[in-house]
Image (cartoon, helix red, strand yellow):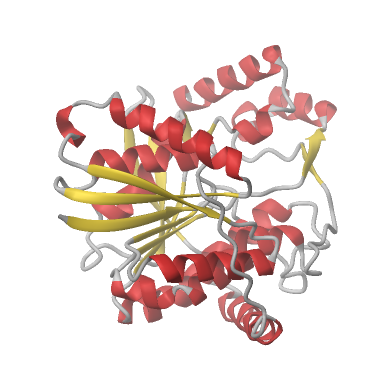
Length: 348
């Protein structure tokens, strides 16, 4: 039986879980698929694995011939020693990795500017639920590694992990999927603030960095037999942000989402399963010999709720500066971590 290994970072998120669900549904029959669940804590790992098992056990005969097993990876991308340990753990267990979904989506949200939200909804309801400016993000947060926290969590930490497991990705002729965002406009990133310490839109800036990092690296990866894509899941309900809403405001948000879709927005997928369409499409259905890799693949939905794929061009401005900065940072951490290997493994 052919074995494949899939690592999904942020597996415990709405999007991460649905990426796994779609991958299970679309994977070839007679494959032994190992899902490597990632989380910062062991209890969340077990919870996510149980959710995936429930999904698999309740599916139809389509997946009956697909054998699934599970592994886990405890990793905190805001801690470089944790990233190094994750690499060490993976390198001992797997000679080849076939899928890596980089679903890092940390933000430092501190609530909602409700006055601003009401004004945006009343004056431009579609824009208010597509490109909202009323989410309050903290400015200047640093990690214990003295890097911009969101820069490290969403960009540098995952990139460093990829650089370390490159031999396994090469042997697996892997697909790497970076999850970006609909809100990754160039205006959110200043090349004088690549670590996103001065901006009040660090989450959006990190996704702009993801776009540029993909453009800077996908060609060299292709020479190694690795196909890398960048995708965006559109707009959908997020468990992480729902904590700032009560029953009424959450219901109001959903109504606005459906209104936006009715008015013609292709990006209001609402459902996490539809949002996971593009990440799995590029690994299972896209043909890397014919379809472009210098565009962003988006999960889109028609007015009547039918999902489809919609591509977007990526502005390459600043690509070389961003890549040079990240490469320099990588060399610095190679030196810092060269003698620091800590072997840790907790039975599941």
